[in-house]
Length: 313
Image (cartoon, rainbow, N blue to C red):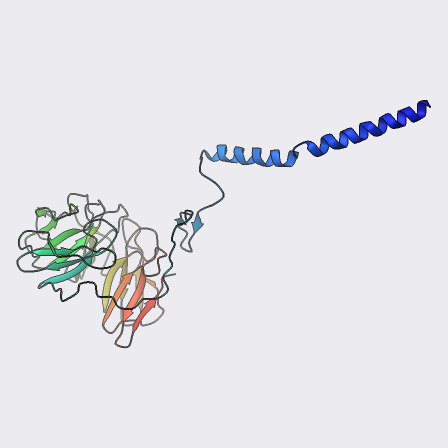
């Protein structure tokens, strides 16, 4: 009789223990939540860690897309769209530059009497706006680049006497400012690009003897610095664009034999590198712009038959 009572008691204890185990939260889930919290504390961030940054082939971090964000990857050009509704011509020069700082390139028409900007709406160019209230012409060249580092492209007029900058304030160009204190000319070409990596376009003068860089301080161009240690130029074309993806504009020289890139180090240009392993040129024009959206400037060659793109890798 005693033995039967003990058996009954043991059975009841076993059933109670089983029911308690089933009703208790799983310890594995608690450990996972605790580990996740500790990981967040270690990195010192309250941001979610479930969506890490992507790494492009160039090695630069790309922020993860936000929920619902419209991410686009271009693969072709669409049909032509009329953006002006009629003829729009600059008597002395025409450029596309983001002068109001909204991230869209605007149409700039330089006339003899004044300079007009037609702001881009994203689907058309707006009405002409007088941005200089009078004639502003560079005897040796007119350029548009962000030399002040504020995100808007400025008007640069190169004269024989000096180089003048008309900073953009987002709605018009301010009066001319002498940025070189005297004549600075490039025998083979003059360019404005950020080769130092400080987000301000620098003055680059290509001479027969060497390439000189006048770094922008934001209010003037500094003294000329020799960046090549000897002559460097392209027989067919020259340009400055970031083809390596490090945020520094590189020197690109298109020769009859091949296309060479001299990467910028931030204080000089490195030795030439053959980037096409043979002749590549555009019959009607050549450009270096990031058309693929990966942060690397691509080679665009315009021929009579079509337009070719050589993506930077």
